[in-house]
Length: 204
Image 1 (cartoon, rainbow, N blue to C red):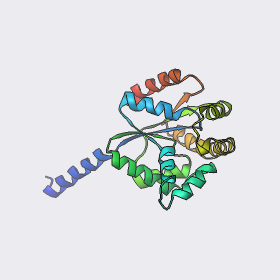
Image 2: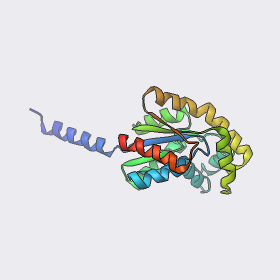
Image 3: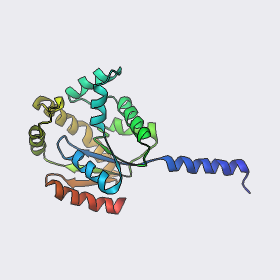
Image 4: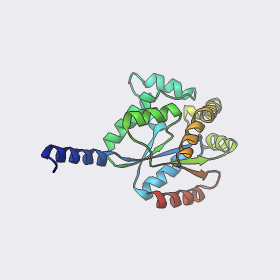
């Protein structure tokens, strides 16, 4: 027969488990269409869209001690230290207080991935990978004309290089775990979203 303390502990454990949010990582090179598709996912399936790039850009414009470092890293196409990015993600998730998130553009390296799992205790339910040729992604970035400093051609080429070197091992890791859902992102927005919807109807 369980004691009152054991019952209380079991209840506490259930409570902790219930508080762990469902997370879907969304990966793909710069210009692969991740942001657009994440917005669509949020609208149709009730997820909260967190764009790591947006969080980092907002922090880079603040007066925080990490602001200048983040801005320099992004302008160079480099990866921001994991502890900084993870802290921003945790703050955003706590502030929003929801239980389902699509995290766009993270993890960008295997070190990012391991650090996130160690710090938060969260593993993704699955991982979307938007696969798109580099030439097409470059064309999209140059044509979107958002005035972003990291959309300059020199920075774009650095971002592609970092993606190929650092993010592909992450994609391989999740593929080996059976969690990767690969999507042909070279098609139109509507065609890509049809594939996305099919995956979420099965996985969600």
